[in-house]
Structure formats: C-alpha cells, structure tokens
Length: 188
Image 1 (cartoon, rainbow, N blue to C red):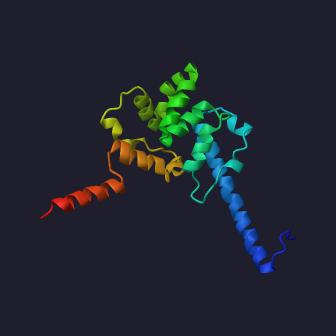
Image 2 (image 1 turned 90 degrees about the horizontal axis):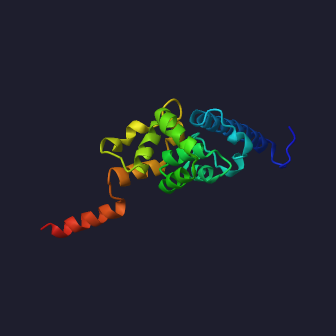
Image 3 (image 1 turned 180 degrees about the horizontal axis):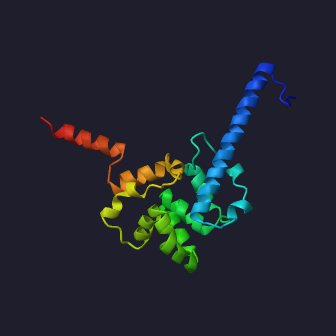
C-alpha cells in the first residue's frame, strides 16, 4: 500500500483500518436511509437524483440525527412526501405545517389513506393538523417505528423533547429548579 499522507508505517495501518471501517459504516448508513425512503415512498427515485452524503454527518449509531433530518426536510429536490414523514418523526411542527400546505392534493390523499397506516406516527400529526388529537392519541410510544426503522429514531432528541414538553407537560430543568426554590420558601 502506498500512502499519500507520508505517515509512519504503523500509523499508516491504523489509518487504513479506520478508513475501511468508516467506509463500511457510511455504506450501512446510506443503505438504511434508502430502505427507510423506499418504505415511506415506494417507487420514488428522488434519492438517486440528490447526493446527500456530503451534507450529512453519519455516526456509528447508524441513524438519521436531528441536524441531518433538518437538512433532508429542507432539501426541495427530495420528494415532499418523504420530507413530510421525516418532519413528522422528528416533530418539526413548522415543517409539518409548511410541507402539508405545499403538498399536492393527491399526495395528501395518499398520506391519509396509505402512509398513516404503514407509518402510524404520521397519523398523530394528521390528527394534529386537523386539531383532532385526543388524550389517547397522546400516548406516542405506540407510534414508534417498527420493522428495522427504529434505529433511525432511537436518538431523536426532538421526539423526546416533544413528548416530554408538549404531550406530557413535563417542565424543563429550569422550571423544576424554580418549583423547588418556591417549595423551599414555603417550608418552615
């Protein structure tokens, strides 16, 4: 092997092993994204037309993180259906609204009749758009993805934040501190 980096031979081997590992991980990440996209929008070829790899920061966990989801949701060359479903999974309220507003009627019908059945988490957001969310709908744990897509949302801090603050009404840490201080003032 010829090194263009002019590294010591021992370090050269380590860099080569790491590079090979990184290429494999990136390939796994890419295949997972393609699988997820195919599940959400079967037959769509928009991922083939967009080179998204330079814009994402893959990581060893193998899922789409919040920053990557934001990039994908904002990429207008990707199918609006796919972007809408991603915005639902990552609880991007503003994107859910804006994508729904620009979406063609036939795509909305497809989402209401097909996608919300195969992607149950989307049904919550459709009810949310219709102002029809009930207390039983707020049990979002039932909406987590299945069939291998769970890995993509395992580290979704937007989802966890949304569930804790908007659905479960859990105060953030600053609010908890002020509650504790208030209770300490009341104690004798």
